Image (cartoon, rainbow, N blue to C red):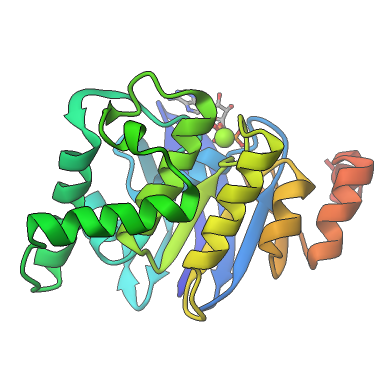
Length: 250
Ligand SMILES: Nc1ncnc2c1ncn2[C@@H]1O[C@H](COP(=O)(O)OP(=O)(O)O)[C@@H](O)[C@H]1O
Ligand SMILES: [Mg+2]
C-alpha cells in the first residue's frame, strides 16, 4: 500500500523529518505516537502534498505510484485521505456543495458519471448516520461555528463520503468527549474494508482500544526510533516516552 524510504522534509528551511522509513501493507492500521513537535503532523502533511513542506530526500511509493510526484488532488482521487488535526472553517461554502464537488471530482477521475442530486443526498444521509452527524450541521457552511468535537466528527463523515483506501487520522480523537470518541472510532471501523489501511496519530490509548492497530511507531525528532506491537502503546500510556529516548540514546 505505502512504502516510505528515507524521507526527509523541511519547512521554512528547517529540517523536520530526518529519514522516515515506514511500510504499511494493505489492510493494516499503524499508530504513530510521539511528543508534541516530533513531526507527526509534518509527515501527514507531506504525504497528502501540503505545499508548505519541501521534501529534500527519500521517496514514498503508494500502490506502485510515486506519491511525491502526484498533485494533492491526484493523491486524494487515488484514495488517500487525511483527517486534519485542526480542521479549517470554510465560510460561504455549504457542506452539501463542498461534498458534492469532492465526491463528483473523484468520480470523474475514475471515469464515472456525477451522482444525481437525489442519489447524492441519499449518500449524505447514509454516511451522516455512520458518525451520527446532525443534519443541521450538514446544512451549514463547512465547519463554520462547529465545536471542536463536531469538526472532528465531520472529518470522519468526509472520510465516509470519499471511501479512501488509505486514511491518515491526525489526532482525530482530540477534542472529543468519551461518547463522541466511541462514535467516531466505531464509525471509522465500519468504514474499514480488508484493503483499507490507516496511519493513526494519537496520544491516547482509548482510541487505540477501538481501532486495534497492528503496529505502533514512535516518532522522536523526525525519526521513527521504535516500532512494536499493540503492547507498545500500552507501555507508553503507562511510562511515557523517556525510556524510549534513553533506549535510543537521545
Ligand atoms: N509552518 C511551520 N513553520 C515553522 N515550523 C513549523 C511549521 N509547522 C511545523 N513546524 C515545526 O515543525 C516541528 C514539528 O511539528 P509537527 O509536525 O506539527 O509536530 P507534531 O504533529 O508531532 O506535534 C515543530 O518543531 C514545529 O514547530
Ligand atoms: Mg501534530
